[in-house]
Length: 394
Ligand SMILES: Cc1cc2nc3c(=O)[nH]c(=O)nc-3n(C[C@H](O)[C@H](O)[C@H](O)COP(=O)(O)OP(=O)(O)OC[C@H]3O[C@@H](n4cnc5c(N)ncnc54)[C@H](O)[C@@H]3O)c2cc1C
Image (cartoon, rainbow, N blue to C red; front, side, top):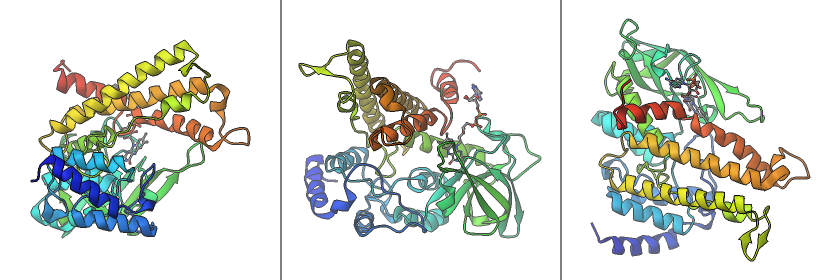
């Protein structure tokens, strides 16, 4: 491994030449689904990064990675962030199921799934929650019955984000109905392009449909696509949840998303609504809240960096619950601050009286209320921290 300075210099040089203009800017590239066509720059960026193993920089080379250690990984992320390059790959393939297979899959499963995930082939949905099983996930009732070389799946999943354009779904299903609640569950990989998988959009008040109900009617999964052993789904599924939470927390080092945490543009946005006097926000209360928020954001970034440095595996254990929760609360606090500063300008859903940035902010403020629900609610994270980190009694 080269010295970090060397690596930084060579990375900077390579990125300057190879990251096309269309792959730079805010936001993320929606990637992976067979049904999404990519523009030329995005396609090129993805191919070039995949060739270097930088779509999954810490994964082994044989599965499409570059085997970077944590320190080199951080340098790569810093250099990507410096030129405002969009992460070439993010999502449930690279960040959730990929590292789970890497850790708990068989050699055959790794060879079958990981190289494709590293190249961004196929988008993944998450089939965990059910109408009667959210926080109490082990109450799930979706069933999978073995039939020769396949599993036949029947049941109903809900809140499956993006399922309407995903190609695959990882599903927690009950494979031994007679077993105790937390036993007899298995994690299965399912191709969504089959008649037995039906996706029904759930329309939100805003009119958008990012969620779906996903119904399985005799859907088929191959026997070889059960991850981590039959009946071990509770353990495997919880590990995947740690990968999910560490992604939300910005400390998942599988893809190029985790750790990519930038300072928010909050001060500049607030200054548009609260008058400045001598370069300072005139409203002392807003000024104090903003400074406290910036301090907390800085502390969050330092905590993320430390968590990544201390990683021994690709996902931290219970740290992910704490950093996910503080990150979500911080984003919500920033939203409240901005909404207060905006006054009535922050209350527009649509219409000529509001700029697109204002209506986006209102929608974002409402959407980000879900950050303390998705991936396990705030109360569930607090329970995990109390029991697993602080050792408090049940
Ligand atoms: C944006 C978003 C995206 C999502 N995407 C997906 C997805 O792709 N796939 C998927 O499978 N799921 C997804 N979910 C579902 C998500 O995992 C669940 O909403 C979440 O786990 C909570 O479950 P629930 O909605 O059934 O609420 P419930 O479990 O019914 O909880 C209701 C309330 O009771 C509280 N509560 C429950 N149990 C306890 C307890 N033991 N102690 C203290 N308080 C408790 C909760 O904190 C909550 O406030 C998504 C959710 C959101 C918001």
